[in-house]
Amino acid sequence: MTPTLAESAALIQPELVALRRAVHEEPEIGLDLPLTQAKVLAALEGLGLEVSVGEKLSSVTAVLRGGRPGPAVLLRGDMDALPVQETSGLPFASRIPGAMHACGHDLHVAGLVGAAKLLVERREELAGSVVLMFQPGEEGGGGAQLMVDEGVLDAAGVSVVAAYALHVAAALLPAGWVASRPGPVMAASDTLEVTFRGRGGHGSMPHTALDPLPAACEAVLGLQTMVTRRFDAFDPVVVTVGTFHAGSVENVIPETASFGATIRSFSVEARQKVAQEALRVVRGIGEAYGLTVEAEIIGGYPVTVNDPGESAFAADVVTKVLGAGRYVEMPHAVAGSEDFGVLDKLVPSAYVMLGATPADRDPFTAPYNHAPEAAFDDSVLADGAALLAGLAIGRLARG
Image 1 (spheres, one colour):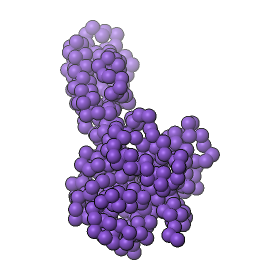
Image 2 (cartoon, rainbow, N blue to C red):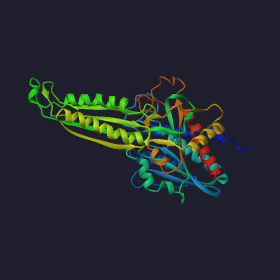
Image 3 (cartoon, helix red, strand yellow):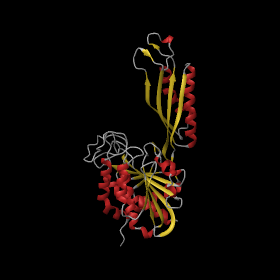
């Protein structure tokens, strides 16, 4: 009797754990990931895949040809780490100062390698091809777009008909649970950078200067009022000012005051509107104070949107591969951002979250992704590999 995907995945769990921990110990940031790329290439060696590497980034693209003709589907796994100093205390913690796999991309690497191994075992059953996309630069750098530009969607010789990805969560979801939803699932992310320019002076005589600080402070508050008064609560935006810089001495009025904010939105319409409104607010406040304002929106990642049909298909695959009760529909999108949104604008896609909260932590209080003490449960590696393989097999079976 042929073993199920879950049973086959359980057999390779130890080697997936070893790969995940090796990647975790040597995290790399951005688009240039030579150590990680080498580990992926070694893990794929001997599987009979058509493997290529990127030109502008340390990507790996591997094509698995099925035993019968058919369409192509894509499975994505991101590989880059974060500029975070790890404090998890794990025995396999990062050995690279200032770098950490705080978002679980090390699990994504191992999970996608596992999916490749499971699919190779079932190669003759597959009616079509599977493109395995090992992507650098998800945490910044636009790695997905670069890989698209270098032809990942057509790597099998035909354009892929669907794309799938999963992301592990260090909290909120119990280990092994899968969550997703149709429609928007992750936010668009843009950056607002603002500088108010006035005239410096002595703190004892503010009337002789043109102080940019009160205007900058008012702009920070004005942006929050803008959010509540200009946007529908059911198509929300989030504006968070994360940096504020002005002056160097308490008795000197500075010439400039500047701040930077992240802007999150969940629809194309809201994204366009918040960019216009944010610039209008800060420029208007600057004009009211008689200041020069330098303000710009720096575009980031688009909204990640699940195709309704592919989202329903993914939910069904979770139940078939992992068992009943393992899937939960998210009540709303998450305000985090993800460059998988680049792919879903080009091909019907589904993006799912896989709980990886360690067994000794409460999902509701555990440190979440990006925290220096974040930890992920290795036990979900087999689940992730089986789920990715199941998505590819099921989609190819649909033709």
